[in-house]
Amino acid sequence: MADNAAGLADAVAAITREAASLAQARFRTDFARWEKSPGEPVCEIDLAVDTLLRTRLSALLPDAGWLSEETADHPDRLERERIWVVDPIDGTRDYIRGRPGWAVSVALVDQGRPVIGVLDAPARNEVWCAVAGSGATLNGNPLTASTRQDFAGARVPTDALPKTDRDLTTVEKPNSIALRMAMVADDRADLVATLRWGNEWDIAAAVLIAAEAGGCVTDALGAQLVFNKPDPRAFGVITSSRGIHDAAIARLSNRARAIIGR
Image 1 (cartoon, one colour):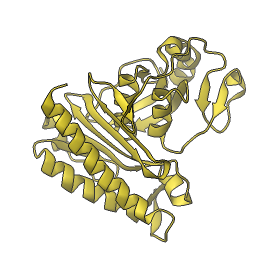
Image 2 (cartoon, helix red, strand yellow):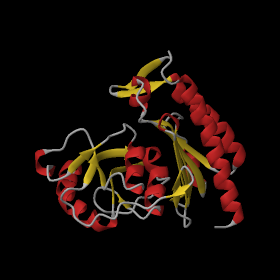
Image 3 (cartoon, one colour):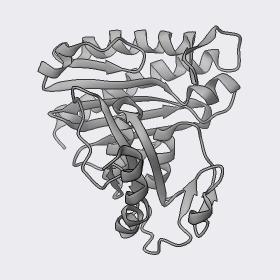
Image 4 (tube, one colour):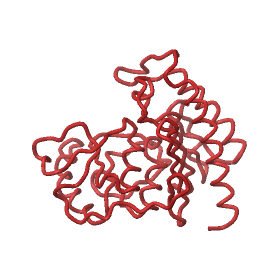
């Protein structure tokens, strides 16, 4: 890894830590909360963290575009080769409920691919970092993703499994999808799968962390994920060990096609 890439990643991690510290200081206190739309909670801390991140990250790379859950999208990001993709608090439901399954998620995307990813989960004492081509770490320690080869019995962070998937095993489920994906990177889970439209900011940092740890990440149909699209969404995400990814696609692809009408 080039020295300038290492220095940039360190700066991103420091800014993300500042944002996470702001959120942690208000965690389990009184703050304003509301719904952006039915079932979509947000709180004043989401907005405060978003403002801090945009100020600090824009100063770090003034030429980079911006895509965040809590900032109105602007088409000028499509003209930028590099863009910050940010979720100020991924797992807002857990944050509002006083549960620890949330994280500040920051990714730097270059020409459609994440090149730096940071998840800072202060309530869990976890800082996940990755740089493209240089591996991933948790609290400074190198990560090795799940190496599971057998699909049956695979560990899935979920509250409950559909009847057709009860050959799998449930494990702890943080509300943050990014943290669930990171669990595969740390061999605490073998499979994370969603079958719904999701936003780029939910997964950008975690995609890089899981991939750099040796996991496999695609959309629900097995296609490579690309970022900074005009419509910044993807249908589903499957994060798993490389040994069971094909089996996961085979298990889920018909359900995915039925949902999206393909």
